[in-house]
Length: 145
Image 1 (cartoon, helix red, strand yellow):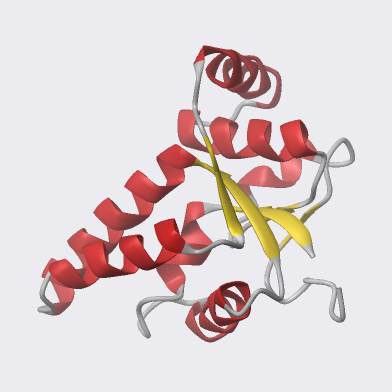
Image 2: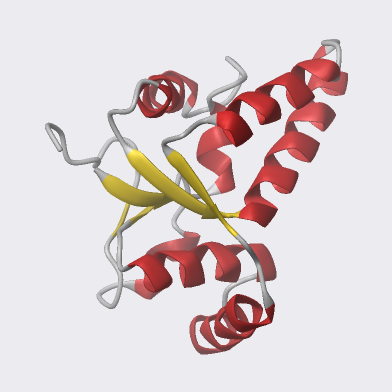
């Protein structure tokens, strides 16, 4: 399935303490195996590594674990890291203004609009984009695509 995945999905996959951990870790495993084609703004990689490093510190895990995870995601041929140039940044700003999204969420949404694909998220913040954009969580994810 072609989609954009929010940072929360990648973060939840790494830590058993996260609410969506089981579903997110299965999703990431499937992405790494090539079962899904995923896109995200490159800034998501920064957010994921930094958030994972903070959680590593919180859980007493070596923070290099977060960097290793980021390297794995960065090298995955099934993830397209969309460059955040001035055009995408402006599209995100407009999207954020229209839908009341925070900056990073607006970049994720603008990337989904750019590619014309659904958005996978673990929270309801992106539901404001419906019906213009199909938004779903891991439990609602269509199977067999």
